[in-house]
Amino acid sequence: IYYFENKNVTVSKNDRTLEEIDNDWSFDKRCYYRIVNRIKEGIEADVVGAIAGKLEKKLDVNVENIQKEDMLKQHPELTHEAAVQTLNEVLLPAMKEVGDKFGAGELILPFVLKSAECMKSAVSELEKYLIKKQGVSKGKLVLCTVYGDVHDIGKNLVKTIFTNNGYTVYDLGKQVPIQQIIEKIEEVQADAVGLSALLVSTSKQMQFFIEKARELDLKIPALCGGAAINSDYLNRIARGDEVYKAGVFYCKTAFDGLNVMNKLRSPERDKFVEEWNSKISKFNERKIAGIKTEIDSPVNQIIPVSSPPVAPYLDKPIILKPSEIDLEEVWSYLNKKSLFVLSWGIRGKSASKIGDPESLLLEWKKKVIDEDLFAPSVVYSYFRCNNKGNNLVVESNKQGEVVFEFPRSSKPKHLCITDYFGKQDTVAFQVVSVGQKTVSKIEELNSTNNYTDAYYLHGLAVETAEALAEWLHNRIRKELNIDRNRGLRYSWGYPSCPDTMQHYLVWKLIDPTRCGIGLTSAGQITPEYSTAAIVVHHPDAEYFIL
Image (cartoon, rainbow, N blue to C red; front, side, top):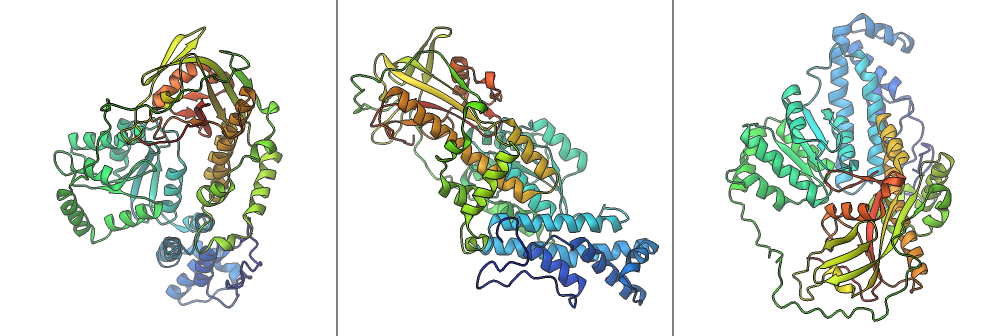
């Protein structure tokens, strides 16, 4: 496909042309083909035809297309059976093939979402012919992003994949307290719970949930995923003082989660859970050297800059509103490799099928500008600061001394961010955001089943926020009159600078709330597509792990 996909375009020499559906095909084959090949237009009529075909066999009749819907209405119970048969034997197997191809690297995620849109249209039509939906669902999942976490792209992908593979998903949204999760599980008698978290700090909520589930003897399998977690972390949670027998499963992708859910809802469930319990009972956590709060004889080899750059002003936060920021200029800082490969998932064997990603980017830039989807704003300021060991003491006229305590690495150099500052030095803080309108638009697209558009817009928003941060960092370098590649910016939540609660100190200094940028109770920034950083001017600055 070439973005909004024309079904009569040959996408590569080796791929079949997505031509008009062959009228000689059965309706079942047409439905299956449309879902696998992402041809949404006309799928509703083919679903009706597929249901009607099964009913005709039951009644041993043959009616004209124009009369098929009347026939379906005249036999509601038999029609219900035919609809369920169509769902289980045609639509769900088609989505399974899509998932299998994605797992094998034959499809990229945007293609999967296109197929999911087709599936959603098909199921919406099919549901008109069900007497009741109860009993049709393969199972019930309560899903959320954990408390304190504002990121939901992963959760939304899980919802899309599960829903279009026959499961009922109760999406509680983001920043969901444990008690609310438990109440929903009990209310709907859920078969499993899905927990998503992006950062290490918020992933602790998964542990708190399992502890509460143990306390309440809540026998609910937990499917957990997110960038900050891994199997060792979840195995440690599951083991605890005693194994959480219902299961805590690490799901790296939405399809990993789907595979786990399928096993939990299959006749092999008991064997699957028993094998998992056996594995967890034998789990030995890998010994990882803990981070020392005090490093034995640390050697600070970083020499502070003898003459720190002179800031054009101190303790005077500057706000730039959307009308003062040129998006095209910001996009000149866009990391296209990160956008195409990471945020848009254009990689692997099937990447060539999407055509020229540059054309796709141009389409989306035009859409963003025409519909005014991004409202970029920034806040930044310079301050006098002093190094006091692992503390950076920032001088503020209004707040007095604001102290940032940074961790020191346990690695050979024993680096700490404060090493890059001396006495009476200069530091800058910056906060940028793409704006709330973007978040609202993505929510709207997801709610109207435009999963692919939501995915592309999300990816562009993420990378635009990073480009905006780089654009502002470059402005700061110019104002400090230093080389364009000198120094680094460190954002909270990353290895060198992990404590997101320090965002509150930044907010005290430059008050980004004046342009609509706030914080959650866990110190995460809202709206979602926003970043904050401390800007280090030292020429030897480097990123490091603790």
